[in-house]
Figure 1 (cartoon, rainbow, N blue to C red):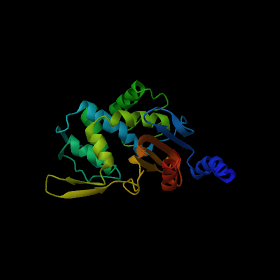
Figure 2 (cartoon, rainbow, N blue to C red):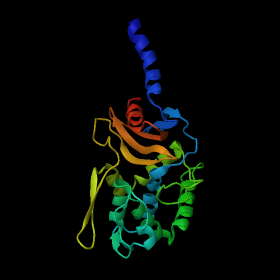
Figure 3 (cartoon, rainbow, N blue to C red):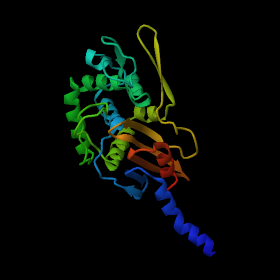
Figure 4 (cartoon, rainbow, N blue to C red):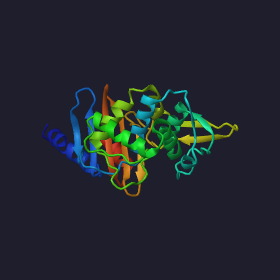
Length: 252
């Protein structure tokens, strides 16, 4: 009996030690109670988790089958890319798939320009929408999450954005897709694999959006299901990302 009691006391500490990320948050979706929090309100670069807000605004303001034209600026974005060429047109639904499954930076800019005319104006809308969702520590400067001084969010804010984005069927589906094939006007195809390497890997494997830059390190905002309950999970600034993310799913 004493041995079991000692194990029960030690296990939470052992799990806590297994999470190396400086910022992490696990929230019970049913109750809103945080079951783990570390630096949850510390502003950090969000990397490609930024694309959750890009997807949210695109779904709120554009029809899924609307056609958007790729600008020269969008086509020039650095990788990760969907191989979009200037002058070609793509449906919003396909661009959102490329954005969330393949973390496409060129698709991010096409969507931004389609909503607001320019990425700079779109970033202002992103920040404004974040404020409406209660995200007080978030500021967006671009649609992709590429490095930009002053572009920050927090684990708590990212989960608020995720919760809003998931209300759209297109977003919810894309976050769970292991891959997406974009068909171009000339018949060419670009195959994009989901950057979430834990997707479908084990029973409580998280579903969500990954992000990485050298400045941000690894970031994630998503959810997992365990023993009949749903939990939101986010982490930022991780240097050992996959072990961190798996450890976070073992906390509840």
